[in-house]
Image (cartoon, rainbow, N blue to C red; front, side, top):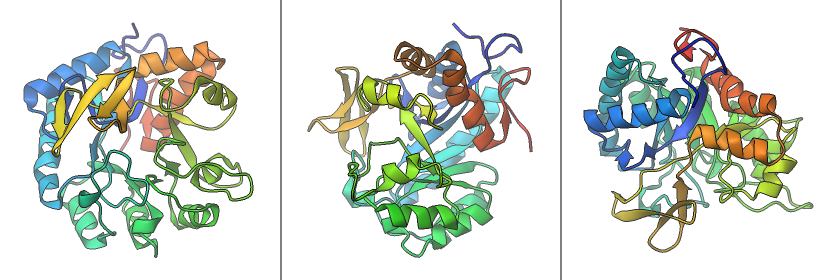
Length: 307
């Protein structure tokens, strides 16, 4: 077990995308749930994380974000892993929705989004959106100017559109190969843009062996990628959809893959077992995601935000 509260040993792990832990869903978690989730994350070596809110009704976000603020302050007082902000995965997504209910998806609303950023200063750190939902890139530019990291995801956009979105300010691609069109050697898309060293996009990767086959993960051992869990709470309801753990991941009742049951320590162990060096694995699970957020993963007390 990695102790993320000490300055010795490996750097603290940093998870940019986790929707929940065990039975704790970050959309609805109460204080005890946040503490239980934090304790589980601490035991897995996580020093900092972004609780992730997948697509929801617009009028539900402020209450959820207020609960995160309370949990962040409580976690700091209890020396639990740092809640380094929030990742909004949606609701401005495109035509690869995955487990996101399509009735909750919508075109970009820049005013609503910036109002959430202003109402909750320094809280919203990462937003995943689809270029189809933001075709003029006004949302990408506004978030960039507000200091929020933009990721592209849940999109079947083509390579050229992904490159243009990167030039407008997008920096990440959410869960490579999942929630995007398949790769084709004569018709490149979002995944190809994410892996092109000439494009300023860094993909995140779910290394549970279900979302991406181990052979493909092995082929990425020298690529610039960031490990995430995309873990979700299980045996819970997500806006009318029941989420169940089985076969090494989490699924909706209709069989739709909805997230992982992975811990960051297991993600590191998996990629090392599949051919990555330990240094490469820790870079992808700690150094690189910390850099995205402006954290120091080697600081005493784990990953510490530098304002």
